Length: 279
Image (tube, rainbow, N blue to C red; front, side):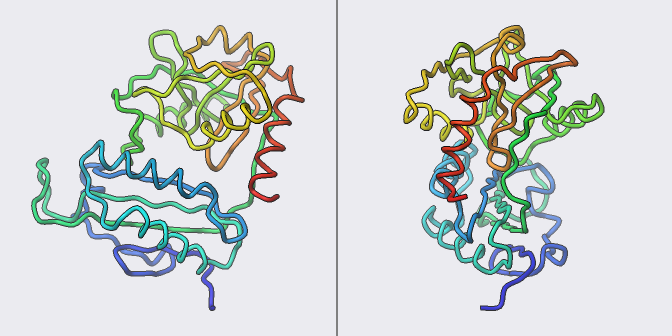
């Protein structure tokens, strides 16, 4: 099978990413009217595919977007597309928008949703021990559990963090940490893994889900509760986790040294992840 360096797919058409053309009337362009997922591919196998498909289905249902195919059919298509890319380690992105129609806030009638996919080579697993984060006010809407392509607040927060010399922004709402601009936030204190509960204020991260499972397997106590910035500063470890960056150890918050006191426990979680992906 002849493979491509990278690949884009849109409603049945396949091209290199830079050659893909998407209609200007796609509602994702006008309104950000869509949902998306990101998964990692190791050895041409999509890691945690079912978790991503389940979350895709949940997000689509919450915004009343009908998927263009069944969840299983989308999974099969993604698997086939990942086989067409040369690199065995890939960054796989896909989104579903409500459809293509003239600009109108109301849902269009008789229009099918659009599926866009791209996959490109990835450098592999990244787990930093020198992450710096900046806190920002969480002024986003109250449906952060939906993985929407409407990410402007996250973009602004991430840029604010970069301009402060940090790698990630952490949202704070009513005094409590919710999540990062593109990751979940967790802390470790006295051997206990603490992370925000699943509700409408955070995205149900797939890596967050896996870390909780790893904790159970390793008999690490878990608390799912909100925590403050002060608790974060006093924690033994702060971990930012996402699909593409599964375990980033925080060393600094708003210019203050933090965490970096329980490397052995973090390493246990990292080793379990590497074991699971076969690396």
